[in-house]
Image (cartoon, rainbow, N blue to C red):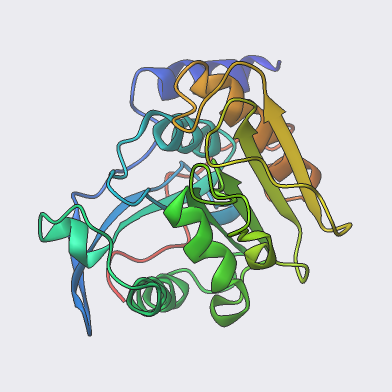
Length: 241
């Protein structure tokens, strides 16, 4: 590792890698959605938007580990809280409402970050939303953490058809996930199974994030390792749409 890059990484580990906006609200037809936007130092390589699980939040351990890894690689990371969770409810809204709110927030993000490639993803329910809306939001790739292939004990209710064939898609599931593990049925879908992990992916979230980072790097959506971010503290993503 070059000395400049090593110094930058040390500062990043100390929490000084860039600006972190407070949670903001974006109005949708189904109530306000929450947005946490984390920016790297220097021009971003891509924008990574992440959604949460059905009853969880954007502070899940696997989402935070992925945020940290992506920031270090030069990505803007947006974590989106669905309106029902922002309102304090745990039961998820209907799929059409989840998709509509997500699509509206992503449209606002695209307006703030013009020209930056968009990769979408999330965990569990958030992964499903990202998969269903990939074409509507114009994403170039999908990261599906703990994709819930079927309800526990109901393999006949498969959701495999939600995995998009139109863009590269990475699925990271635990081999002990009661929601099942998808099979890569089309060339664009890659499935990585994490040994000993259940649906929460809590055993080694940093390892899961490293798998995603390798995939992002292979897709060309990370900053080149020889390109130092030290020359600029700006990013190509405005504070407001």
